[in-house]
Image 1 (cartoon, rainbow, N blue to C red):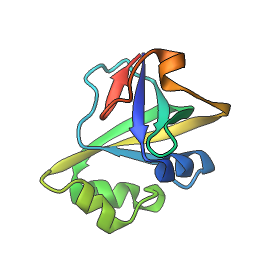
Image 2 (image 1 turned 45 degrees about the vertical axis):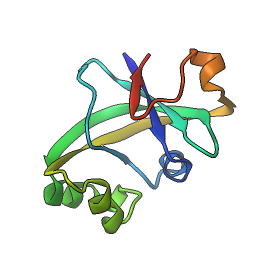
Image 3 (image 1 turned 90 degrees about the horizontal axis):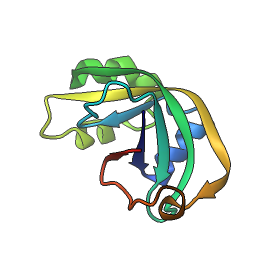
Length: 122
């Protein structure tokens, strides 16, 4: 099973250059068979730019989650806590086996879907 995740281009690019090894989420998909994430770089790029495999998904309190992921979070500590405001815990998808596409894909043409707010099963 695969999902499409909407990720801001700044952070999507960090995934593919290796400086971001965790993708943070307030909620996570219920289907535990999801093994691959298709990366949709949101506005202004609005293209599918690659994919990665899920190593593990961490779920923890915010302080512990930050301590576990901070070296390869790809975001600042301030942004981390701002993103998770109003939450007691969060999720971090550990990224492995990244593959950036040679040609970015159009989400509508390739998958016949609209950009997901958070994620979308495919």
